[in-house]
Length: 377
Image 1 (tube, rainbow, N blue to C red):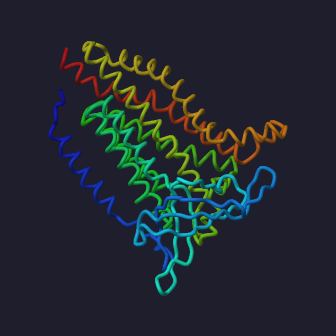
Image 2: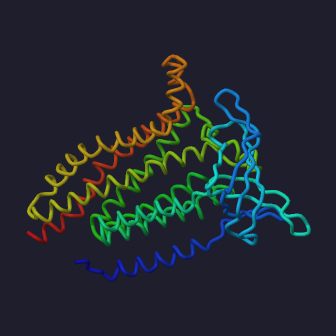
Image 3: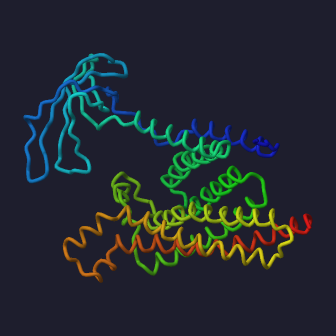
C-alpha cells in the first residue's frame, strides 16, 4: 500500500509545474526553416535507383522516389523527391517502397512545390513506442516508485535540453553550469526515488561531495593529459557554426563530470538504502558496526559499478579500437592517441568518484542513522 506523505505530494506537484514550464521554455536557438519550406512526413510509393552507382562498398549518386505527403499543408499530394548519396555510410540512407520518410519540401512564390529532399527515415513513432514500453515495464516492476522515476527522467532530459545546452551555447561557464544542473538533478532524483528520508539526505550529501571531487579530478587530469576539447565528436562543427567563443576544453571537463554523476548517485542511494534496512532489522547496531557494514557493501558494489562504467565507455569506442587492431597499431601509439586517452580519462575519473562515494555514504549514513538507532533502542 502506497502511503502519500504531505512533503512528497507537494514536491511532486511543484515538480510537475516545473516540468510544464520547462517544456514551454524556448531554448533561444529555434531556427525557422528556410522561407517557403516545410518539413513533412511522407510515405515512399516507389523508388528509382538508376542514378546510384557503386564505388567499392559505397553507394553514391542520386536516388529518386515518388512520395505521398502524410502531414502538413500538402497532405495527400504525390511528389517526386530526391535522395542524395555522398558515400558516407553514417549519413547516407537508401529508401524502399513502403518506407516512411521525413522530407523537406520547398515552394515557389506561387505556392507550388518545386523540390522535395529526403532527409531521413521517419523514426519518431518507433521512438515513442520504445519510450512507452520502457515506461510500462518500469511502472509494472516498480509501481509508484516507477512513476517517480519517470518524472526524474523527464526532468533530467528537459533540464539538459532547455537549460544546460542553451546556457553553454550562450557562453556560460561550462563547468559551473554543469555542476549546478548536475547537483540539482542529483537532489531531485534522490528525493523522488527515496522520498524525504534520511537515506535520501545521506545519499545527496555524499553524491554532491563526490561529484565535486570528480569535477576537480577531471580538471586536474585533463590538464596533465593535455587533451583539447575538440576530441569530442561534433565539437569542431560548433566552431564552424559561428560559436568561436566556446571553451571546448571546459565543455569536455563538464562532460566527464556529468557522465559519472549518474553512477555516483546510483551507488550512494544503494548503500544508504542498504544501511537503512540494517538499522530497521538491527536497531541496536553501533555506529562503528554500521560504518563497517556500509564499507563492506560498498566494496562489492564498487567492483561491479566500475566494470559497468568501463564497459559503457568501451562500447562507444569499440570500432576505433577495432581499427587500431586491424591496422596493427603499436600499443604505445594507441595509449597515446587522443581518443583513447580521452576515454581512459573519462573511465578512471568516474571510477575514482565511485570509489570515493562508497565510504563517504557509509560515514554520513552512520551519523544520520545513529539517532534513529538510539531512539529505537
